[in-house]
Length: 167
Ligand SMILES: [Zn+2]
Image (cartoon, rainbow, N blue to C red):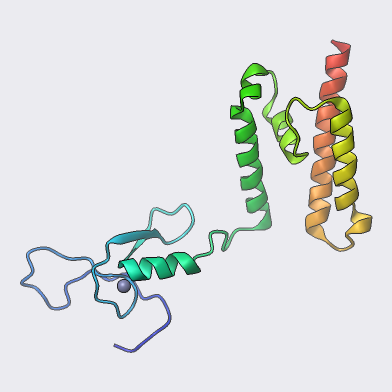
């Protein structure tokens, strides 16, 4: 078998050993004949798995990039959802169930506790808006997205504060 650096197709064991009582899955790394006993996902959130021997499972895990193929949008969404879910399950969120998901997200985007005061929200918004302002990040689409997200988050929270004041 030629030596190859590429990952071969999954291979079900056997190799002319018809006399074996049951099929033994071999390591999916091309050229390896050790039993494939360690599952490794072929892609993020995929049920499709490679089966590797211990050595090749370790090699695969080292080289596997969790975010490979993910767009910036996907990564950001995932991070924000994790932050919003965390905020939603925090002790304070239980004490303040009136916060909408959008409001919780806004606090997470501004990296603030949901107990933040109006002054704290304003101060954090100014600080982050300055950092991600398009004038300070020319041609940086990531910073521009972040800036718009900050603006929206601030709007959501100031509207919420105004509504609370009127109530
Ligand atoms: Zn192997």
